[in-house]
Image: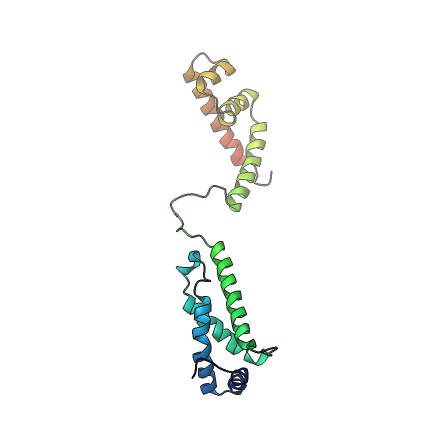
Length: 193
């Protein structure tokens, strides 16, 4: 087929292709695919070129247009080529949007997420409520030992001073005993406290 095609020749092929003429469809492909490939070359961004080949996008676009050939209504000379180019540009834009939403580097499955999952949040909220309820039921001295160590993160030297204990070891024992009591209370606290 010659490199040039008249509008009427193109429309005749489209009409025949709509009627199921395979040869007319092949002629349309032979004429328009190279033009679309030249048009696509250079329009596909570098960031998308690895996972996507321009040739594949052109083929896919042409196949999509051919499936909807019955809906095509020419408005001017070279309307079919303009229609194909617009369809290809739309596919290129879709591909670009898709590539921006996808990570470009492989995920590191060994690294934990920076934020807790919704399930961790729910469990954490429930556990915090049980912790608070159990903490309220402890003696004030045990509550103070736990708050000093767990919530405030004080060192045992400071805890010994706050609790009035003579040694660091005594402060350590007081915190440990308070934590055991807290664990027992939390086990008794219903989940929906």
